[in-house]
Amino acid sequence: MSDAPSIYVSTYAKYNAGNLAGDWLNLEDYADSEDFYKACERLHSDEADPEYMFQTYSGIPAALYSESGGIDRVYDWLDLEDDMRAAVEIYLDQVDGNAEPWEAARRVNAVFDSLEDYAADYLENWFGHDNPALEFLWMYINLRDVAEGLLTGETYAKTDDGTLYIFET
Image 1 (cartoon, rainbow, N blue to C red):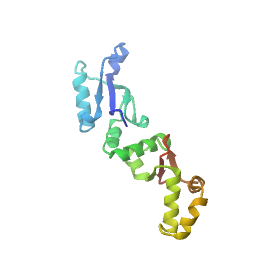
Image 2 (cartoon, helix red, strand yellow):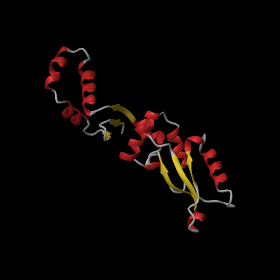
Image 3 (cartoon, rainbow, N blue to C red):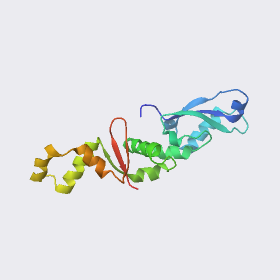
Image 4 (cartoon, rainbow, N blue to C red):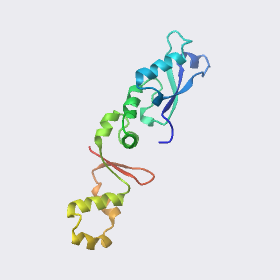
């Protein structure tokens, strides 16, 4: 992801008064949700008991955004390695937006650059990497069709760049 995970933080009192005053907070600047809320408290120290309003976001999965909370889920996602973050974002956006990030991460089974790579990997594992019959058959096999057949009944998602994510059900 190119955008830094950030949230624009204001308060409901300011919003209801027609004031959109607040600021973008980069979530990576804070160790956890507790530190993040301390920063929110400092930002809105002009209110006695501020009710924070997260007006918009950038660089986090849409399924994790909530106008009034849910920061712990975002930090669970931030705690993942970058490649797992991407897979979890795909899972949340295309399979189950209500899943907890750790649950989605547990469901990531495999990632392939394309449908064809998935089919080739499957066939090589099934027939053996050095099987001479498979070497002969490569020119006759439509890997895209094989992949689509293999994916029947699987939970999977494809990205615009062709990356294929397969998830355990």
